[in-house]
Amino acid sequence: MSGLARTLGRFVAFLDRHGVDYMFIGGHALPFYGRIRATLDIDVAVNISGEEDFDELLRQAAHEGYDVAFGSFGNPMCVFMDKTSGYEIEVWTRPDGIEWDRETLDRRRKRDMAGTEAWVVSPEDFMVSKLARPDRGTGDEQDVKSVLERDDVDLDWGYLERRAGRHDVWSILQMIRER
Image 1 (cartoon, rainbow, N blue to C red):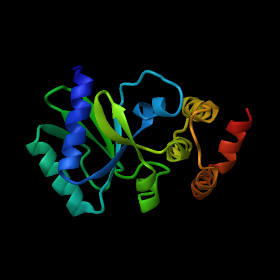
Image 2: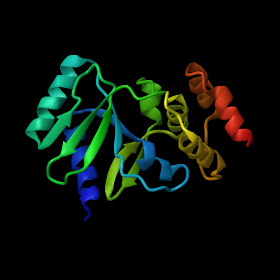
Image 3: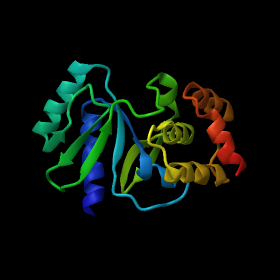
């Protein structure tokens, strides 16, 4: 088993043990819906309701072999470094374009990630998140385009329009779709 596979499995088990709702976002979610591209980033969105819960998660992480950088509830992202493998995991409490509500959680999908069953962001929320980034680049738009081009990805266009509209990216999505 590779170091990456062990890291993913260990981190998913950690989140599950502590009852944290999560989903993989970014480059590790993309191959399920769009193109395959190399990425070293492990991005995980976690649903943490408040500072007290966040601080408890950090305490548990330290106890279970993770070093945490930028670990403040005020930051939208912090980095968990798995001391057993050396891999870093970007943990997002407030990822761009993702709303932590029941609908978002219900739309996540269980997928096999390097031998570990893990929650992955829905294709609709993936695209909105990519387009809602303040530092959005052509790579993000290419990721979205690759999802739109896949015939085997069933999109809920009503949900997508609603979510994209809330984040002011519906017109951008339409332009990418028409290219």
